[in-house]
Image (cartoon, rainbow, N blue to C red; front, side, top):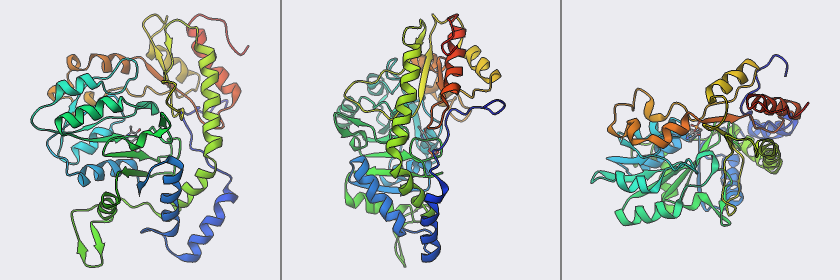
Length: 377
Ligand SMILES: *Cc1c(COP(=O)(O)O)cnc(C)c1O
């Protein structure tokens, strides 16, 4: 740990000798992509694990988002959150859709349903909310608004792998949900993603679209893309799924140590998730509020100086990037809550294998900034 930067997250890699038998099978079959046996197995096993019925694997989450919008034929304006990873809005841009940013809720940091309603125009066709940090959106209110105004709903669920709400998968809300299996996510296939949809016919359409639009050798039904997950990725996903309980338990344990250390510190705030939601601890967003003696950026700099790569997710806001900042909805006046929170959050390192003494060091840096006695010493 001495001279290397501690990352905010690290992919979980099972022992290599557990992966080799999968590779041997691929070498034997010489079936490397296009709905291979591992691809089909992973789709089935993920449906079972996640508690969903229709899931289509993708080579990454961004192509899954782009394809989901294509499959629903979304056009015009889509209401979305500026407080997310930039791919959320890029997926709209790549579809020629105008993003309309709505502000977020100060507690959940997810899109504020009352702000969605205010942003609807005759051109609005859909809502693209994000379950930020794996904390479910106000799915029932969003559903009510969508039903009232005849809008489609696509959830960016890149952070919400395995999350349940009242015992039901959060992926079952809206018309579709998209997962990411990027190396930085709770469940990873190096790169990867998936669309979860409501019925077999829609899944078939998505499966055609992710393979250039091919239905059979001579039939192309639409302007599809290449979004297919290959056999090596799928095999790794099957192996990763065998370790998911360990991954989640480790994350819960690490999160709890942070929570105990910071619970009584003035000016610090951890993510609060309602008791009826399960958690995957995909991130540890620590909010450095006004009462804290030092600023978020000062704490970030101090961590960097001490080789801790805490991350300011999500700063800048998507609405502050050059591609989007000219939009009327991108103004700070329209997004006061998101603007403030993007200047408060510091995501702390969490991943299986984070050494306890490294975590103690991270905690000590925060407590020292608060002028408090050190935790580990
Ligand atoms: C990671 C992420 C994506 C993009 O997923 P990729 O698999 O990296 O393409 C999209 N949205 C959010 C919120 C993400 O965190």
